[in-house]
Length: 251
Image 1 (cartoon, rainbow, N blue to C red):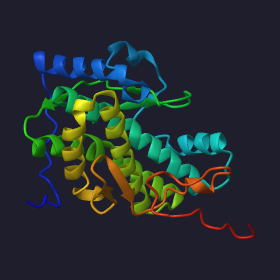
Image 2: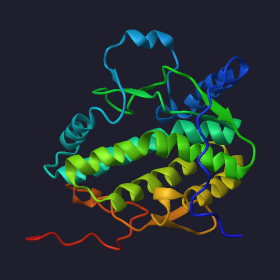
Image 3: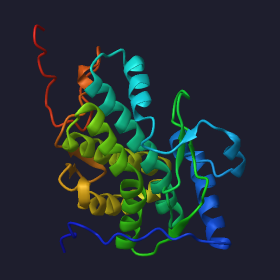
Image 4: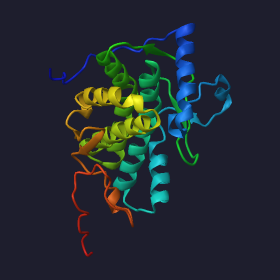
């Protein structure tokens, strides 16, 4: 049966008592998979004035990325920064969803700019939902990551840099599949449910048409290029739509 083009979007529901505790415990568990999966739920973070919501401060993140890549091309820096943010958002949500059957809401998410490595994340309000069937799981994940965060981030990046919407959705799809590969590598039993979740998400909303699953595993070929090849010394990503690095003018 073909998957629906748009799955029903489930409203975020705050879970009190044991439900909230389940979300907190799930986040704490998947944080052990690596820094991209870590999200603080510590109320004491409230005293830190550096926490801010997305998409505030996107300009600064792009500038930091440009300096790290040593590129003067704002579109390259913007694409790379957004791709990293997409992976950062997918990771804890997919980890909780596949390992614990719990999808945390990212509606209240805050980040701290300027820190090296994975962008620090904090949830001042812990909420989410338990999910059962695969369609409900995919809808809840899409709501949390895409509706609550990525749509606003993508819009801000487009407005500030003119990067094409298709490229940004390609980045989001690439980060999604890449995160599922990390999870499958850490916990092989998640490979099969990860494949099913990827298929549903890649057929939904902005992710629809961003790329094509290939091979028997979590292979993927996107339909846009993230532009990373334009960084000095860089080549093509493994899921790039290009078969060879384009010849630069004057090169």
